[in-house]
Length: 111
Image (cartoon, rainbow, N blue to C red; front, side, top):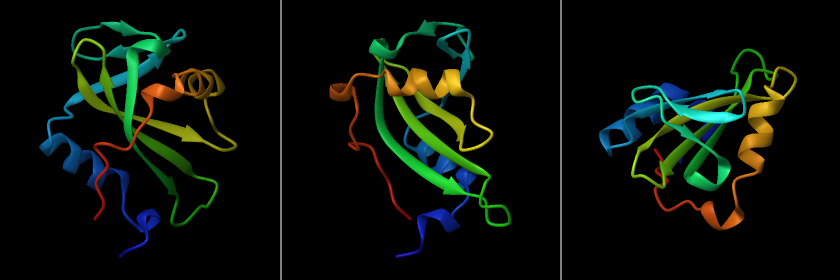
């Protein structure tokens, strides 16, 4: 099996989109927002069904996490979050606040 860190985030995003995870989410003012509908979500509304961590190939401090998400109202999509020295701390705290029972790897794919 190839090292997951060697795969690019775009490869996984494309694969998840093919599985129906097509919504894009952005973090703003303490909420996750669906880009298409502008619906806002709190941590209790979100289910993380897979995640993949990355380190930059040329710069190890370039780190990110791809979250694969489902919402309580049925949206399925992804959110890419930087972590490490350049992290958005508010967004990181949001994802930490998602209840543990809402976190699984039920949709996880591997290349």
